[in-house]
Length: 96
Image (cartoon, rainbow, N blue to C red; front, side, top):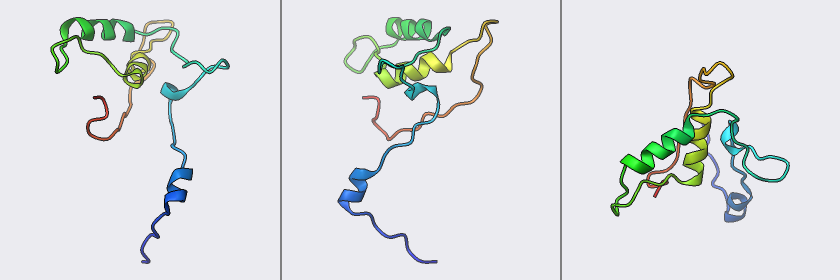
């Protein structure tokens, strides 16, 4: 088995990330697409009220984390969760 060749700095700069799922979808106007029905806003409100950040202030989700929570807790017309499985994988320290 031959070793995988290393990429040059230019090749690395040309790489495009792969985004799967609705968290990264944008509308025609360029704004983030959000679910019509979600319990995520209640989750975010609860976190801000009851969780504390390292500095003692209220917990704040990053915009990406909030979008993920909104989509994760999306519900259909009958109030059933839309998603049953999901993965959000990032590097250590990503949410700071």
